[in-house]
Image (tube, rainbow, N blue to C red):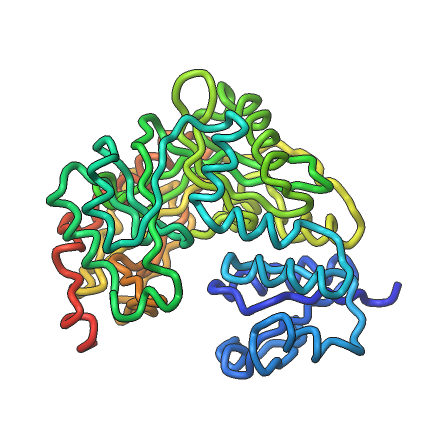
Length: 415
């Protein structure tokens, strides 16, 4: 069989996932071709596992122009930052798949919430504004409430608002001289959702959802809710799997998702799940690695088989409980070496930590980052409790200082 070619739009933040996707493509007699600017491609480790396509700019016209005489069998993105662009390129070159209108609506948390409310799929109230309008917005919002960027990921910019005194802490996360130019000053304020939080991975093929896994999410708690650990499969899987599957099928149908990976974050309360947010890509935070270890499932192979051949994935059972805990630091404080004295050392499978590491990014398009992941530990056991207690041990080492009290323009500009 001749090698098929898959055009990947944009270098992802996690180049490790690009390596995994490239290996999965080879298993399907396909080869990835990554399109991005010369500067971005230069930052990727030299490898022969995928090809590179240099474009003058990462936009539709530049990509279409460069690929005018090239043949590709599929066009995808494996990073949230380019899912809409990949859809636009597919449309320009006559490929099917999830539309750019759908991708744009999913990227916009307020638009997603509005669509779900119109279909009776969420009871969460929400209001949109700019960050400079937040104080006035609280006149019509019932507290406590969650404020978050309309379009971003990784728990960045998320905060629980108890009263007006929290507005200043939220505002300090924004560079108001820069953020508006990128639309990063756009926020949404939502009613707070009680209940335990999980994430869900799956794959939609021709509109039909296959649910891969429900994962327990561990975060820093109020007020930031920064994600610090995951355990797969979730302790709620047996009781909630069918309800989660049915709910998310209704969600992806309402949003118009055709063929895409799905990462959804849900609260489990009452009779059905409640949506926090949804993305048309797999979860970050080593979720793809957890899928491969736990089930085992090669998630990118499933996605590429779907876009190349229309194949729906098989549903498989987990072989053990796995978890990942992140050693987290504050971007404005020196990194404190963690303890490795885990309560269940036999469940530890790997530790990655180097005290010399520095935050790779302090801000993105005017939105200041507060936490960063300096390393991680992975766990495996047939006993859920052993993995759970190990990840809680990692969580309990996260600095308790409210990072919003540290992030100021002066400290960030001198690093």
